[in-house]
Image (cartoon, rainbow over all chains, first blue to last red; front, side, top):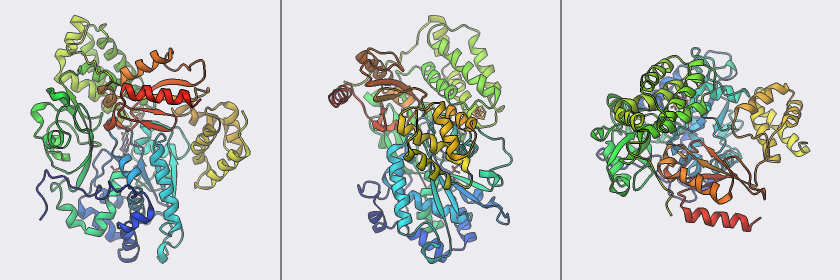
Length: 434
Length: 158
Ligand SMILES: Cc1cc2nc3c(=O)[nH]c(=O)nc-3n(C[C@H](O)[C@H](O)[C@H](O)COP(=O)(O)O)c2cc1C
Ligand code: SF4
Ligand code: FES
């Protein structure tokens, strides 16, 4: 019997506390690369895709798209090579889960990459890692070279006749390169600009060849699904959001950290039982449940189950699984200003509404926060945000409108107070601890 | 600034790892940056030559990514995360504290050439906020005492 929803569920984190897990000998002792051998020897490519479809696994990078289905869009009759890219660019504010997997359990991540590569019949895969992630990079680099040395990568892997190369590609510190088409531009040596879809990468991606981009956490699930079966995986979580999720809890909680829980666990359980409740026992004000790009939830929504459908029904998104908690002393205009700065800074500049709009949003929110707002600013902000939303090539544009629109919707009084009194209603004055 | 033979060799090796050589531009930029701590046009030219791509292709890529400064910085490049999770835990005070302590403005280098303080966006260390990256290394769960101790160590190590 599976434990009730709400219990901590260590699937990806099964061995995460083992200090030697990053070492290939230890990883193999604990079962690494068994799934890879099984895939090569016993599972037909089509069956592998079906297995992952049956597991219900959905992407952990943000959009939650079914993984097996995404793979099945790759045309198998195309004469072009097919590529797999592991998206390890992790830069959505609040999100720090992929880093834990890469630093502590790199072989599991690599094994996931190998399995996905096989599923789409790819012979050169790329590991696109965020440029700043030094320890992750060293661990993944070592894991790749050890995997080559043991014959898990390279030519005629484990005598199966299957060849696969894995190339580590270090990013240059740009959030937009996590967006899948920008990631491909970056891999091709260009500026990391997003591309118009369609064509989708599955048909025309890297070097105009069929390409799949999958997130680190998504891939890390694959070895377990192969070893324990689709039914086992699908039994965790909810019918439409199966399995577990790593939630990065940050901000005003007593025990911030990465917690792996079954999908469908209530937000309240995550914040109060696992993350220890609100810092200094203050009152909860707002929670961002899926990284900085998604709308805030309010304290009366704490019973929302953390699965893709429920969070969406509550008016937000599960996104990258980053839960950012804010207590009563947080000025929401200040929060909007911080995030507006981020999107302005990270816009790739390809589309006008985003390039111009993100800067303008920041300018106005900055002015309001600093006591120079005008009454007509609020209407301008809304108008502007609505003009970016839906009018851009990639989702960064939409994301930039979110913090401004949702704080305006739920905390309009704070904006008004700023404009009327030239100062915060509640001042965010978070000091460095001594 | 001249790229060493070793760096050039590594750059050309990077070119062999990709189906198309242009993909090696970003790895090449990292290699050149590792050697000199900043990049300039002369280095772009050499990279372009080694890889057999156009100068503008290298310059364009380099200008897009935040990791490649065009001028040298202090021996310790202190990058304080200014984003939401860190800000909620006092990162703005951390930045101010460092600037006051060093008597510099954001982006300036101390006279002894040791420290440059800049602000950066989220570095994926949100659950251990506030944090800063110094050269390659992450320093997390920072307190004033921890920062004081680190600075003393770096000054002593000069
Ligand atoms: C602006 C932007 C940034 C993104 N950053 C990331 C990222 O850092 N990591 C990631 O896995 N996905 C990121 N995504 C989502 C990817 O585009 C893509 O959907 C994902 O990598 C697919 O993998 P999955 O199907 O395994 O979730 C981002 C999307 C956008 C619009
Ligand atoms: S929405 Fe913004 S980030 Fe995305 S392609 Fe357009 S300009 Fe670039
Ligand atoms: S917000 Fe500072 S590391 Fe993410």
